[in-house]
Image (cartoon, rainbow, N blue to C red):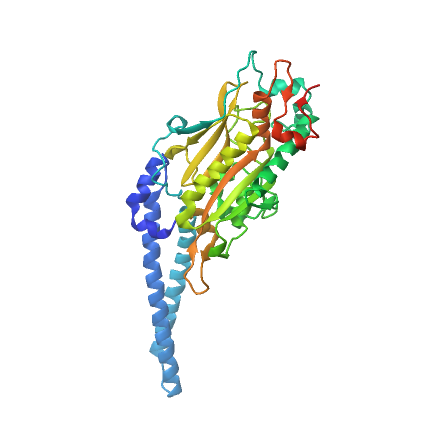
Length: 422
């Protein structure tokens, strides 16, 4: 959520909305804000007049003097005050709803553009493997090696679900264990969060109006299934004041993720790349405002290093203004090379949300007990979405015999298995 003080500089907001290529009723919000400010003044004035009259009536009664005119005026002021307060209450709700839909500001280093083609290449890592055979995609590979069962999963749960089988189950768990060890070795606090989250916490972490088409709601409960542990980690310090000396705080969480993938019809319908349920190890950082851009670079470098350890070729892209998520001020995507698809595919999103989430969740910090509090900055990055990473491993480590080599760093987590075959 943005600071309402920014409404005093509408040109800044208009520029942000234009750069994001969005339609937003900014004029309606500005009018609501103006009316809200007028009502605040009128309510305060009416309360003051009411208090003055109450003192006058009390004084007159103590002196056995009638206060009929004052009492009559008090009733008029009270009735008017009730109307003003009711109007302000309704207006405050509308104002907050619109404010929560206003996207985050963009950092100056975000390039302008409206489409994926406007994203900026930053660097690449790893070497594309030379294959003297026609590479297969992960669907063909996993099916031929009896590593997945899509048909039976669809029978019991519907499309975009799957059974992992045999060595792919072990590979999935190996990736999780490697990721957790990797983060622990980089001074992250490891977490396993609740898999459900209340509306109040979710609203502070994301734009719930946009996200409701993506997440699963628990019927009859004030709970949603988590789409990512980022939201749980963002809200775990909701309404808290952190000690400045502890910052940055780095969390790493393992959780399943549940997504409707609404709007993705016809895209990646086959396989395990875009599914309703998957496992993810997520990174989350609480930072001092003046250090958040530095922490963003560190977060990205840590993630890039993880995929270097796995031997998966990647490229890093800086997202343009129109492709940057609404809660983010700046985002990098890490894309993995997929030989079977002859394309790079996004497997990591690494974002700096500056103070946007912290304001909605009321997360502040201070260095000394009597010091004025400041909002923290929050950052997040996927370390690994295991199903997507397994797609990259299957396609990059396939052999001409139709088998899959196990990356060296994963073998100790798979009982020293070196190759997946029938």
